[in-house]
Image (cartoon, rainbow, N blue to C red; front, side, top):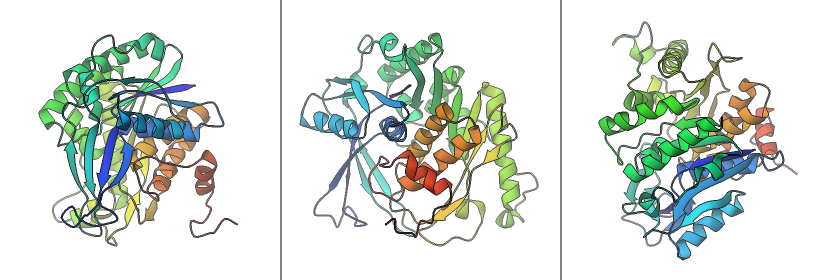
Length: 359
């Protein structure tokens, strides 16, 4: 089964460790990109079950472009539809935050190779004819008119062949405005079967927002987890009803965002899935509180794990747990893409201690 992902490959440059740009004497490099990371997650989790991650993209025909392709090939991704051409590989610079200091991102991706993609550069019939799934994100939609035209053609072709389509809304304020995002994203939702988001991006991209019942200015700091769960369920229900999604997956706000006391450097993570089956009432994954070594790529690993699970598991609840656990594992390693097998994910699902040494 092929899971086709369409998006940009980026080169990430970061000061070592937690040093700042103003301190750095060197930069570490990683390759990434939202859809490329999803393809890498699917490829690794599906290595033994025949689920393949396939990437459609464009990179320059130079050493950096080849290095990017080789990186994702090493992750198991099928790169035969990555076109060589265009001026340059998109860059982004990341300064890793710590404790109360947030990470900082600087983009340098204008005139990147994928933005020069033209009609006819991709034979979407060939790419999607035998695919089981097509995935894209709001980041790709933000890359310009040329890319959006190809994205629309891909979505229409996927529907022609009965291919399931998923979208992670993934709003990036440094790429476009809320108005631009909403104007572009809402028409594309008619092609989406599975929508993946968080509360903030759903409001910005789709205009769907809810507040917890019973929350006032006096009680907001004491908002219970139950109220937040209720708000997440109602948000997912609204998204599903308005846009006729088959399923909605939401990352659930917690910790500081929900008024709970937190330990600096630690995050609390879980997700919700709402579908027409086992998760029709909105099912929440297990919750983890942990200290990540990397804040980038967790959402992409979640998406890759969820897609893999929905294609291979009989239970959509089991698929959600695979996505959640893949996300947690991803944030234990540096770089943008996950590097692990489905066996490691299942060990975490089964409750293996993260403190154990495997001997």
